[in-house]
Length: 299
Image (tube, rainbow, N blue to C red):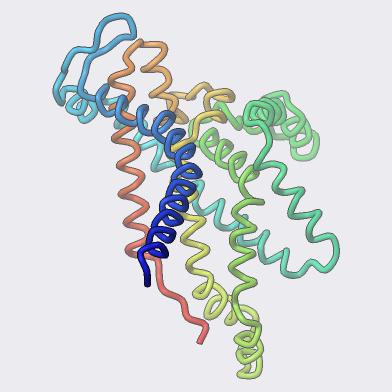
């Protein structure tokens, strides 16, 4: 190979690299400005004392120590466990039933899927106000219950019922999105496995528990992980409907961060709570994947 050919190849290679860099650079710049810088600033804030008006001063690990002695943080941690106890079973059950129902639908399947996805992309403020009025003490649902059964239910004024009601609203929002994940998982299971099980005399219940659920494990774990992350990020529904009450039972970490940063004017501590919350959710997700995620083979 002569020198001229090598030079041409080298020149062409440089042009390719420059072209590649020109494509990647806008994304890298966006990431650095809108993700990298805020993340670095957040970490710095966690080790400082700042109130928006004065210069940040180094505060060591005092913010982290404060978290573990803050009774409100402990209360919110228990609230989060309560939300998890309600939300994960509700989301998994509703999404799985929706996915199974889709497999039986022959006509209008696309319309049904899109209809359920509308809830997922709808405004959190709009549907929170809607459900707040629907479940109000003198709202349409309680009036109907009073007329039919002579009872009214304190959906948002009873501490435990308030948590359940918030989880019910969130389940309504995400049933379409999570249901489609499980539906895709169901479609990936070869029909030959079900046919073979039927030939062996297995009934529907046995096929569901012995074949469908085990082979749906990756999709179920995906939905569970998303539900855990969702739980740690709950804000709009309890903030607008219950304001974190009653008795702080629906106060979440995001509500506490918001109040700390903008009402108590303590962004440093709010940032520290955010970091600890993110790390906690990450640990929970990793534990779920470690102990419940299984490799699935269709062979």
